[in-house]
Length: 214
Image (cartoon, rainbow, N blue to C red):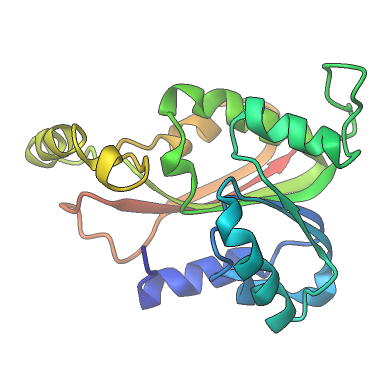
């Protein structure tokens, strides 16, 4: 879904912080790629499971001075999809199931993509994200999460959730990325905030987050 003007500012702030070797989960067609600072990005690994979007991703990379820096991965964020793709790129050893102690990436980014993950796999996904980060590396995310501010909205979301994922490509309204990150150890710093255009009754509550690996 298109970002509102307020959301664009938050997304821009996050992506401008990305540096070094970057992994983005679910970049889609690359509509947010212009927020990256090309001089700070060594390599951008774009894990996008929809291969028909890959040509558009490369076009956007060229348009925004990232040509030659983008590596396409036909993979989702789930460990069972992501890890084999990283092994194919030689970023992980193909002879062991353990992840490197010193990590692989300086930055991992997700922008409006984790909602399409089954929330039962979210904790495992974020654990892998943390393991893939180098010490001091940052996990940057902008995602919508469940609105639990009032019982009426919660009931409405519960009803809509029966049909919403089927109509919206697997998007779920009960995201819990904020709770998962706050409930994990292994972070040196965690900052998560609800985006300012949230009034309290909307189905979508967006959060902006930055977590630094210890």
